[in-house]
Length: 498
Image (cartoon, rainbow, N blue to C red; front, side, top):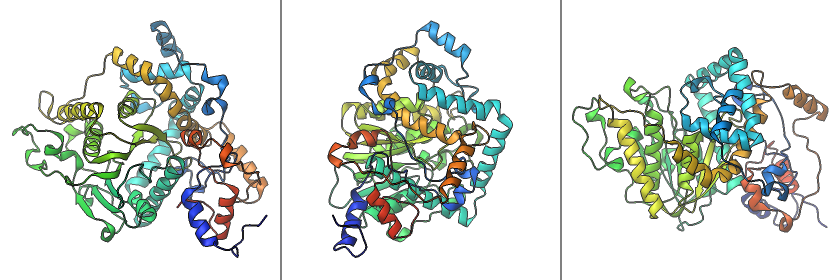
């Protein structure tokens, strides 16, 4: 049996091939995508830690012992009891949490231990240790809002690392159906890390972007505009002709600011990123504040679904998979796409953010067309509704809608939520504001190893006996021993999957 050395014949070709194809091996180490700066800065990653070994429990594997245990609906009596015994907000900003999300979380508390665990850490960090939690997030916000060039560049690199980890887990950067030359649209592009990752994997791809100008509070672009096939810089929530066929009310205070073009309308894209989030640095009229999350989400989803090619992939940043809003988006997309969730194991690990990866999208299906109609209605209401005509919140859905979603999609929601909740709980457990001491235990383990890059040898598992599909669903992103050798060869402490 030959050994893997730089002198072996076809080594370079083999490395490229393996880096492109390898995804996971059971009991392998987690990919370390964390920079040295992040490891020593708890405000960036929620704690200081080195190479972690991910273990997948039976409940995440969907073992026979758990497969027969189906989630059950919450009765009115159980709902009242859960609301009395549990604090289900988990975030002081959720003082006005709508009844729909309360019902979803009560359902999850009843049916899923991993959700109960993450809620315990959230409550400890944001309610019991409120002063520490507030100080932590205040520092994070200040760092993000006042980032200098080096900080913004680290953010750009981090986005590339997230995209590569996402691809290793979900295959997102290889759409199932695509033309010979891949076309990618990056909505809310800046700083451009996702596009950079796509171009690294597909050098001949035609990449387009839409981003908020820096003069309006947007992030600077770090991906070179020379490699882009098209770039538009404007507020994506203001594309009136894209989101409605109705006339803009002339008495609207921002009447002249709405945009009438339909960007890149003559293209269909194989891969679309919807990575927008409401920026604190953007100057907006006060009347938009309460409805901006809805406006931005609807804008991205409408634009993406009206530009995606049949069989393409849409990736969207979401928050709180246990909220009704996020769960309903996943439920809606599941009607016309193959939907999975992804959360980076390290980057923003202590936060509630995660990604929806919707593959094999069918944009011309009845369900997709109905979704667009609903999103356009929501955008219009959030933009022009209310007594003043400047937008109003959408009413909470009736309980019957929430129950129907959970009856049809609750089991799948739990399956997708387990790795997300586990990753967040594990990261929160290592923080000083929400942790339970396991951070120190982990540091002791790191010290005993002597080096943050030493790994325990293990026996690889045959590919034919490994459930690759299950591993992707469980959000596992370790590397094989062979991939580790490649990492050692190039002197890198991490495998980025390129």
